[in-house]
Amino acid sequence: FGVAGAAAATGLSQLAASASLLRELARKRSAEGPARAAPRAPRRTDEERAAARKLLTTSLATLTRSTAQLGCWVFIASEVSRRLGPAAIAAHGVVLKVWLLFVLAAEAPAVAGQVLCARHVSTGQLPRARRVLRDLARKTAAAGAATAAALVLAAGPAARGFFPADPAAAAGCARLFRWAAVCVPLVWPNALFEAVLLGAGRSYKFLALATVTNCLVVSATARFLIGARPLPSSAWQAIALFFVLRSSCAATRLFATKRGGLGFDRREFRRRVVSS
Image 1: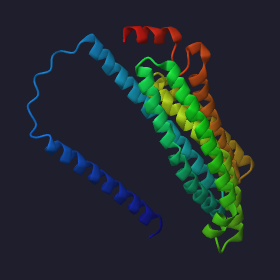
Image 2: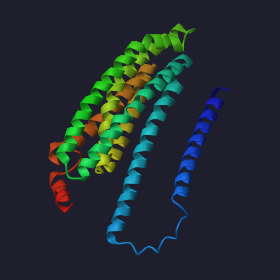
Image 3: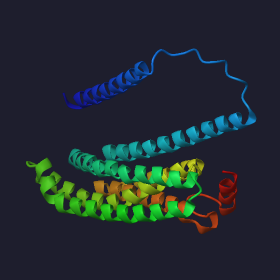
Image 4: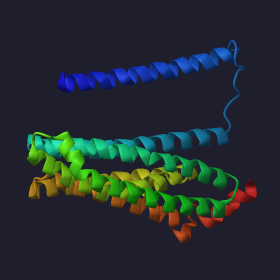
């Protein structure tokens, strides 16, 4: 069924996941008993209005950040599809799918760091949050190096397995696996740094602005590189630049000593600790 079959399978999997989640929500709701009529809510206070405005601002910042990332990926994919041949497109698609598995794996320590650091920040233990962050940063760096080594070692056998009847495509796929190995160590710390910043609750607008700026730079770079050298490796050079910029921005925000680290101003953090 080709592309149509793949799209249908994706749609069916999403419907199945949504049905499963709705079923679980319905089960929990029925376990809580019949719903009671809620009392009439009092008029909002100034503090509640400020909280609602902050929620709206952070939601818009998150939407902007996600849209910019998706737009950058779509733009790079469109440049590859428009300028390169079928074999190059196939090799790029295969390597990208395998690489995304490692990208998703990097979310696990990132979520752990987000939860643990947010817990320590909320209780006024900023030094402890920094220690957790440094420990997780070392571990994610080791995990990134290990996954890069795995991609390098698997480049040849995996490429031949994906394209057994096309030596040219297999050779191109092997080269792209090496570029994926260059990119994957950048993904692990970037995911951790951005997740911790979001968990601290201080950097939604910063990350949105930084992501939009980085996406514009990377999109322009991808167009230039693919135009100058119409090869799939040019797209992967732009992807590597994307994660270099993202991790640099997030690390600068996290470890900036003038702001006290974790996106906090030292004086503001002391005020929050005293008030809590």
